[in-house]
Image 1 (cartoon, rainbow, N blue to C red):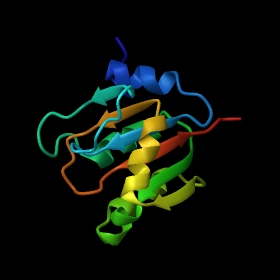
Image 2: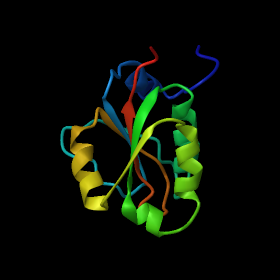
Image 3: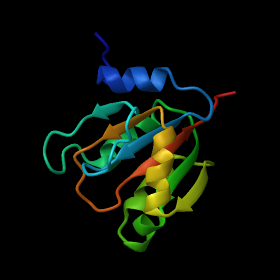
Image 4: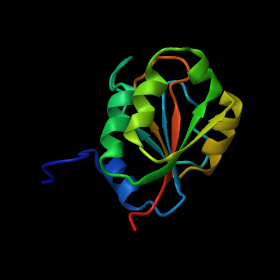
Amino acid sequence: MKKAGILNRRLAMTIATMGHTDLLVVGDAGLPVPPGVPCVDLAVTAGLPALLDVVQAIATELQVEGVMLAEETRERRDSLADDLLPLFPGAEVMWVSHQALKKTSELARAVVRTGETTPYANIILRSGVTF
């Protein structure tokens, strides 16, 4: 039995199989999952688990070279973007429209669905390399 790190087997497997430049979407409970893109559904109830908690766990295991967030996330002026970005020091940050973020999710290795119910609480992580 795994004793540390991400315990959800589908999420752990998804991270373990990612290569350089692969995309992983972590989304709120309402983000549509494009046809053909696997969904790791972690949602239990509204708000559980929170997107930030899931991204924090992923940040400990996935080398990330780039993040994509929706402009609408920044415009909300809450602390979500301020809380997410420090998890990936040195990563390139791209701000796009929410529509562009949803379109880009069609290219993802997987979409991780959380119980987050905050509007526009979605992030795309671009996998890097450790060397």
